Amino acid sequence: MNRSSTRLLAVAAFAAMAAGIVSFGSRSTLIAPVALAQNMGERTVSGTVLNAEAEPVSGATVFLKNQKTKTIRSFSSLANGHFHFAQVNMAEDFDLWAEKDGHKSTVKTVSSWDARKDFISDLKLK
Image (cartoon, rainbow, N blue to C red; front, side, top):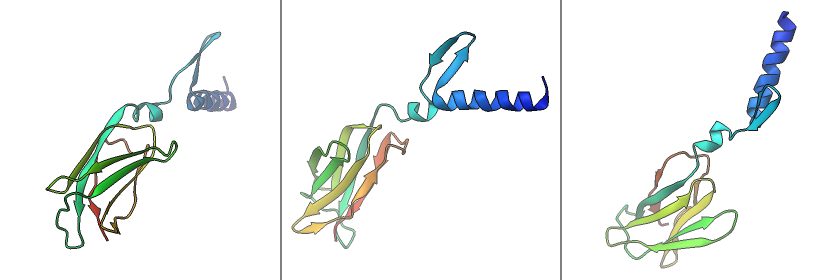
């Protein structure tokens, strides 16, 4: 096999792997790409709601909105300002923010590209 044939074969093999198709003789098998496999399952999303002086805020409403389906989950922050969402799908993107008495935090994104099983973020009310 000459050099250009080897290079062409390597490019074809790489393209097949990138497409998720691996050939074994006359049979082809579909496999899940590795990048998708690491973000399968569920995660937790938690943190603390803080006021402008960086003190914990109890009773703030924390929202977790699915960017695709637009469904919203909510949690009322505890006396120590903590909030917690369990069973958050890692394959989807979410918006996270808090509100209380007309004050709102910036919206943070919980990205499907983020492989952390525990997403922890403080939300500061403005």
